[in-house]
Length: 248
Image (cartoon, rainbow, N blue to C red; front, side, top):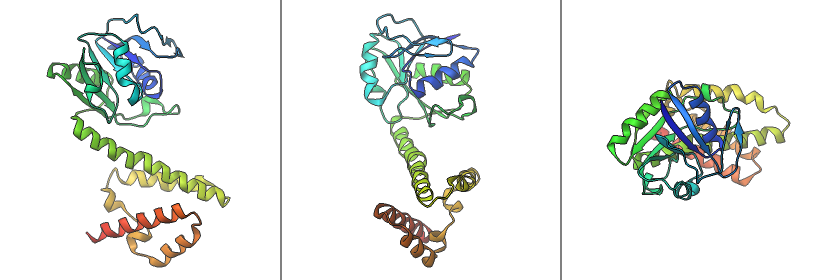
């Protein structure tokens, strides 16, 4: 049985708690948070002075809080890992063996953890600790990738484009439909099919639309409809990028 200590009670921390609860080979020995809260049967504690012995200490805190939290635990020669996509493991207190346990997924309160596919990007300061993180992934039934900091940063950048930026485009589409008294739900099957396509095709091969067809009449009509200058400039930028890519 592997014992875990989870630090942080935000969305990431709560999802890892749920994952551990469904594993027969893992046990949460302690759940620490600056503010005490509870999730089902497990309660957090804000008593950072009373640290229990664990095999892995998992820091599920904001990027800016990682170093401070790792010092607060006052540990020595323990395996401590953070879940950040952009930070190196050396942001953690150097009194310990350090690593990264980064879940490449978006988490929210509405997520059902058991239904999420969560690729894990793992890295350790010392080779001997890699097996422990691999075993942890296996116990959680998560696919894992041994990825160094430089590649993880690139993955994090790609994730921002594919998740954060695309979601903002959905937000713009929602505002456009709402302003014109159109039900946004009409677009949801299209959004779903667009996501499904890239499971089978490279994104460039799945590209459709007026920019892909170089349909200047439709493009000009769309630009006339857009009253927001920021949206209009965004439309022009994406149109040009798609056109340029099709020339390659």
